[in-house]
Length: 132
Image (tube, rainbow, N blue to C red; front, side):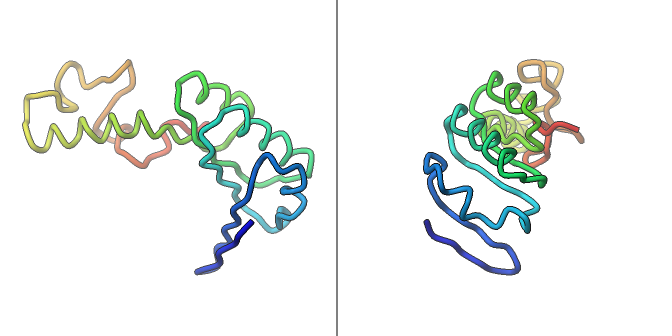
């Protein structure tokens, strides 16, 4: 495990599969726990372990499929990052800027898989996947 502290933010890196890892974290002071682990079962086990250790702060996870996004929401995860959907949205915005009329947000009803893109709701980096 390593840690990095800068600008009042403590980042701790370790293995979510280590059963003693959560015991080493300053969970009583943490406002957020952020996991970039690409494995949904590991992330959900982490969420469960955090709750068993009394963590009451917010949780942000990464999910790579719509199903995993939904599973994370059901488990009460505050923010679910979907990097593949974000990359697709960003690609659409780049295309719109470089080649208007060729696949931008205003084309084809401005949707990607039923999710609005562009405008206020579809800008990259916003918490579209977050639960309210």
